[in-house]
Length: 95
Image (cartoon, rainbow, N blue to C red; front, side, top):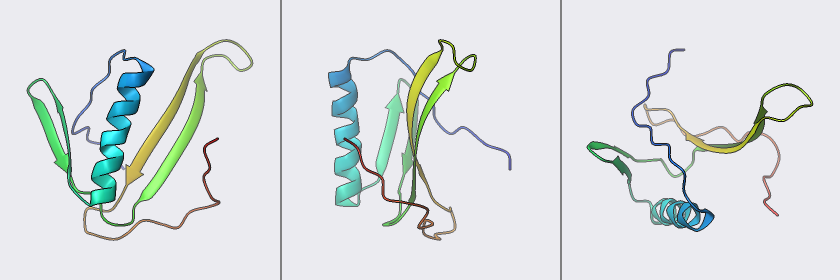
């Protein structure tokens, strides 16, 4: 299925700045409010439903067994037609 990027922002930030941003997203989710992403002149507002599919990935990009770029990715996914997320597998824990 083709993917259309509606918004993208990428820049170096401190851990503290990233934590503040993630807290703001968490607050919006808890309150059931729309989430508006803005960077310069670009902006998009999304309204996640009460239940969504939440995907977390830890990845290494580069040669197998060698040095590369590490990443942690968080993704919320839902159907535009209003269907709620899949129950998926296993309980996610962060330690």
